[in-house]
Image (cartoon, rainbow, N blue to C red):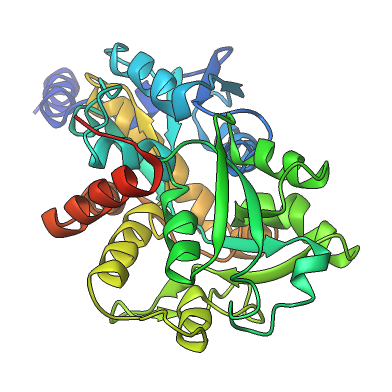
Length: 358
């Protein structure tokens, strides 16, 4: 075989095996990572944490800029992303449980379909509920001394991720009045800091970044986390906050709260959909396989960095990160709940807040 023939054969093999990752070059380009919330919440901190790490691993080291498109509890941004097609590698979209829950509940404002998008990375998170100092002094590991207090809570909306805390507080027998309409959980924290709200919760990254300081300064009292799942699907203490009791523990210590039955099963179903795989990064529908593979490889490189676990634990919490097929599986789990849990929550939303979902 001549050198010329050998070269031709090699070229033919290359064509048959398809494009390599090296053929995707983002040199000199800007990748926009759109977050459908305000810049003050946990999703913002999550994306801002990953953006520079992703930039280092993508071919050509493009600038990754996080942009915010808040509105309608994230459905505005998600509906916009649904219209984007044929991604060239310069657009990424991040969702959270507050984007997943309206989808799960058939919210009429939802015009997006998760199955159309291309998941490349997903990561879990937790959540911490906390009280104002005056009422926090009455907290003894149960909600027994909190049932006669009228609390105010800044909420993104009844069909958002706030389902998890609102249903938990109701199961504990607490009187929590939500003020709907904030654009992100960070805005809820600001309401709490200004004294406009008397109870709040934040996802882990936002709690670590801001709310934990309030607790350290004596301006807030940590009440409970939502917990984490062990390998058998049981709720255990959140490894990021091992000293804070879980909602399950507080419920077990509170008169009238049950960790079995329809309410508990429904709460747990939405917790599982909203937190263990809460934050997901997507490429638009129609994105080529080579661009998809490039992003999967880049996120894998981020995850494989020797210092990643230590750095991420400090910034976004100690939670698993999924890429590629793992991200696809996590997305399916985060966008699926049982018919029974769905029916229970829809009925509860109508009875508790007058919210009817058609």
